[in-house]
Structure formats: C-alpha cells, structure tokens
Amino acid sequence: MTKKFITYMAASIVGYILFAGSIIAFYKDDPANMDLPDRQEFNLRYVATLKVENKTKRTDVIYYLGSPDITEAKEIEDSIYQVMFYRTRKIRGDGITTKDECTPMLFINGLLIAWGKDAYSQYNAY
Image (tube, rainbow, N blue to C red; front, side):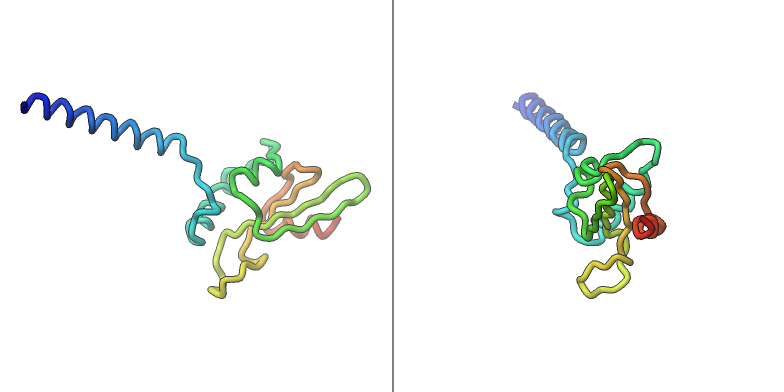
C-alpha cells in the first residue's frame, strides 16, 4: 500500500509540474486582463524590445499589446500615418489616460517607424 501511495504521489507531482510548465510556456499574457500597474510594466517591457530594423507591423503591436489607449491617423498623398499611444506610466491618479502617460508609436502604412517622445512630433510634422 505504501509503494502504491508513493507511486501515485510521484505521478501526481510530475503531472502537476508538466501542467504548470505548459501553462507558463504557452499562456499569452493579455494586457486587457491586467490591472493598470501590470499593464504599464508589460507595455514598457515590450517597447524596450523594439528595434527599427525588425520592421514591426501595426498588427503585431496590437497582437501583443492589445488595443491602444489613444490613437490618431491621417492620410497624406498615398500614405497612411497612424500614431498609437500605449500607457506606460502613471502621472495622475484620476483614472483617465492622457497622452503624457503613454508612449506614442508611429506607423506609416502599417509599419512601425518610430516610438517614444519624438514619434508624436514626427507625426505632427507630416
């Protein structure tokens, strides 16, 4: 009886470890389900991984970060300029997200070309 119990217990522990490991490995974080401080940190970490040479698409950013907090767009000649703002810091505790609490990301024809403080300035310059 003791040998059976130990076998079942060991199998249960191994099963639990495999289950927990698969959740950790395959579960995608969803910013929509995070509280504000966690979402801000998640957004900051994602922004820190961006590189211009990676040619990041707008759809990829939305996939990882979810819908933007604020967005603006305009068409100039044959190009679509869009700036999306993702909340990355808290300045006021009023429950309203403002542009100064966000990191802007500038896309031209769906391709990320700039992010950070200067991205919105570039958007306004076009």
